[in-house]
Amino acid sequence: MGKKKDSLELYFHIPFCIKKCDYCDFLSGPATRVGQEAYIYALLREMKAVSAIEKRTVDTVFIGGGTPSVPECGIMEKLLQGIGKNFQLAADAEVTIEANPGTLTPEKLALYRRYGINRISIGLQSPENQELRALGRIHNYQQFLESYHMAREAGFSNINIDLMFAIPGQSYEGWIQNLRTVAKLGPEHISAYSLIIEEGTPFSARKLDLPDEDTEYRMYEDVAAVLGKYGYYQYEISNYAKKDRNCRHNEGYWQRKDYLGLGLGAASLVGRERFTNTSDMSEYLENSGNLEKIRTDRETLTREDEMGEFMFLGLRMTKGVSKKDFQEYFGTSIEKIYGEVLEKYKKQGLLLEEDGRICLSRAGIHVSNAVMADFLL
Ligand code: SF4
Image (cartoon, rainbow, N blue to C red; front, top):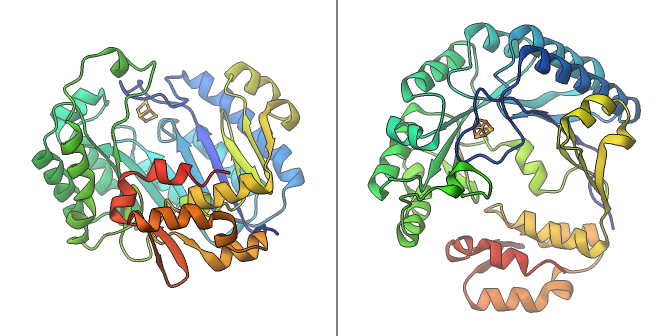
């Protein structure tokens, strides 16, 4: 039993935002220039410690947040130099940076390109200014358009746009119109998530005018068909891409490739070990060069854990899981372990089997959490 260990993915967490959005519970917030610099230096210390023991070639890099486009060029350049110095990137590595409208400049974009960033993921959420205000976003649609065109002019030919549905006050028709507006721009990739009300956020304390369950169901159900008309295909529960433009980094997560997360609160999977960096900023700043001290929640996965993850994560992808891969990884057949569960959901029409792969049906995608949870042993 084993899993592919030859490749590695890297994630860098940049926990800065201009201002907190009203629905956000990510590890992020405003920071001064001095605070940002101190953090990047800490990240460089962690990189050095990691690179002393990790020598594999890196297939994908994802600089996420927060808003990685907040730090000025001088600060960001130190991080990008650090990545180049400490890690060996594959010649065709996918290198993504997340960005928010209102924080990008031609200088920043030129810097990203110069250091090999070849994919940019822009958090738009909605092309409707009223909805952006309802979410507490810092930008309007015009600023997004400026950022988008600036990115194209800087040479980015692989752009993702994040969109959100089930926003307070949003109608079904409004959402479909939002999809069309964005698809017409022709980004290579669109992520479409529903708004989740997280505890402890300003949204959780407000009475919100949210779409009812039926409307939200239709909002999700019709994304694939609407975007399909513009040449996008759904390859994961919330992700749609033009041909050959899937996000390789995220696919790596769902396929359980090894990944190392660097920075505050970043999660890693190495072999059968899962761990997460401390989310305490002062602890991170003080100890980032000492991996033993910052890595918390260490867990060695059992064979059963790995099987559960294989199914739980693999079923997120529309192509589902390969029976052959399961057999190769675990040395036993998928039917032997999951025969009953598979039968049950196939009978209910929630799972399908085709060409040696098992995947969620359209009906199955709507209840994916319940179906996938049944595979945890
Ligand atoms: S920009 Fe993103 S990470 Fe920052 S507060 Fe808003 S949702 Fe959260």
